[in-house]
Image 1 (cartoon, one colour):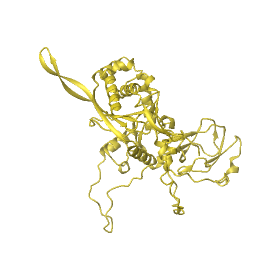
Image 2 (cartoon, rainbow, N blue to C red):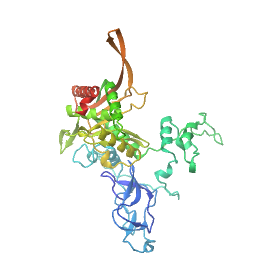
Image 3 (cartoon, rainbow, N blue to C red):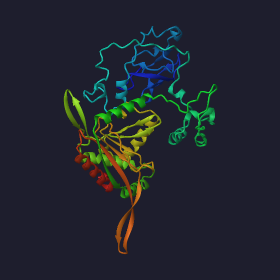
Length: 444
């Protein structure tokens, strides 16, 4: 089992792309490996022949380093490996405890950096226990074949899945009418939930009107990390109303002259504006760390902005690096690419671990005026952005008093009081507001 990220300790076997006897060249995808963050392709880097598969598709929690297949030199008779077993390959070891690995997977700081705030150095809640644990009891095998995560999920189109998530439709209850039983967008639109009256099963017992959905590894990781953030980082919040009328006009002008080379979004401007504010108020572009017993505040020289992206399996924060030195078109291209690969589960660990500041934009939802966000540790700040609203502003003209319509958004900054004092957080919001309301400044 390969280690596909610095924090990976075990993985699930997805679909094998090669069968015993197939020739493999460097760069060929051998098998899909499911981690707690994504499903990734394992590309083999040597020439050879796949002689034997030791771990079938659907095998779970295979520890890193355990044998999963046998490779032989090209031209080898693979029939000789037909009776080859896992014990012949040296056996396997049990995967390590999951909790620390789950925390590391979601952390914005890679593990083993030497900092006491990195996941690998966080204290384990069971470390103080000296009593020996009871012997584990193995459950009886069911005789059935384990399924991959892809096989367990109903076949559904991406647009239908997005609509189902938006409307809260339980996908497993929808009967697909597409090819091969695939659930389509029309199936979601036509779905009618069953009566809320609890039906009775034969014998008079009441059938449950709910469904217990097992929490995925990623959902557990998100829960652990955000609970840790709220418990260990004293949050405070600073909100401001910001005019985006000039920004929208500049965006329209730039897109009109782009000749299809790029299409800037409002979020691209806000990402750039947050980087400008971080350079002017560098205390926000910092993090609280404990290194070799000494507490330090690490102030970063570049601004790497983590952008919150909603995916079918949970929230991810891919990173646009060096935003302070990037132009708007480069930011736009990277956000689109990272967002697509985040939703497809194809991000590399270094693309979502790290970052010095985070922005979370829910402006696409017209119902959200404002909200507050939880800090992504070990960062010291995150900006929450609401939707755009037209607001009447009193104005004086030659004909008398009147009103002008101004496009406005409400932004709320969440700051870690260990690192950023209240006045400093307020200064950061002021600088952000200034550059957004005068967007030509971010082009300088």
